[in-house]
Length: 453
Figure 1 (tube, one colour):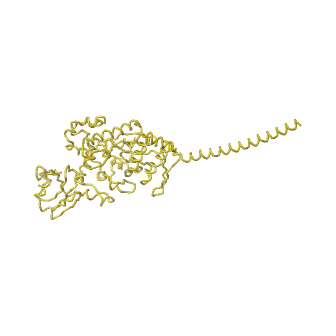
Figure 2: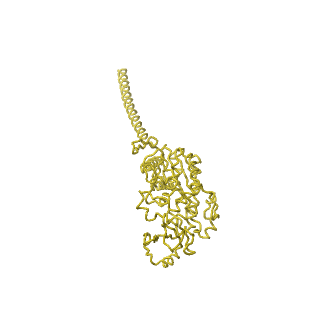
Figure 3: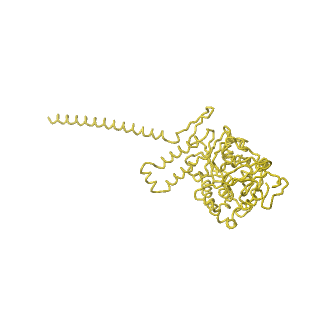
């Protein structure tokens, strides 16, 4: 009896163990399936497996990913970033396009989240880790760069302050390269102030403040460029790009690994053309880059910076010396221009350039054909006496309003808004063609206060 009971209990125990084993096996199998699916989901979301596919007008397919050799162009505003991207845009295999404006702002937000310990803790607790944010940033930036213009073999982005995040971008896009535009801070600041380019934190009423802020901004960008390394970040000096465009662009093309094209030396001929250079109607540099590469803007700052600021220049903007500029040289010695640049500059000063058809109606209020006009420049406080001596000229005085007046042989044009500049004019410009006012061809100005160009 006892033996029989033992056998029964043993049989029940074996049956129970078998049932438990089968149950645990099923559970283990289900867990493996769930884990496999989870890994599959993560695999689908990994940025390195994501690609953007675009077709051009000829139905040619382009594939873009985070592994592609993106080009980022940046620097302190008014440092030649627009000229640089326009010259790159002229290359048949490169597309940069207008400023996106959104990319540097998103990068600044990402940086702010990382700096705030409390915010980072909250994001981590919510599962929004650095890995999640970085994947989202990669996808967003790539999408914006790829889709805000026509597809091309090489894509580039030009947003000046983007290079404040070049170290972070170099991690997001491991094959990207960076062009840091460097310009004499005195010229950059003068351009900001005279063209009223609003930049957060810059007091446009003070050369001292703007030069100090310029120095701090370029210091951050330059330091990050050095950290990224020479193989991936190239400082490009605006003055040398302007004086020696062919030599400079050849070095840039070698750095980027892009085949040479002479088109990069004649960007102005490709503005508004299919596959050429697309310009924004509202960016402040558009009126300058429609011209061939020239020296017009190199030394416009001379004579405008207050004497006390010039005396303290080395202390106000220490990055001038670190970047190789002489902070006390007035005028500075940037070098001698190539013959092509000399010829281009003469053309620009004569007004021998065309406004692209797609920009007409937007720039014509402040880009005027001057082939038949003499350009006269005077200081503002001499303007009233000049106009009084020519009372028959009726001038529109509404600020910002430009009106051509013609009467017989007389043509008079007046800019009433000082921010609207004319080639070769340092103050409020007036263009005049009239017998008896000034004989510019013979070099005889109307008075000592008026000079012919």
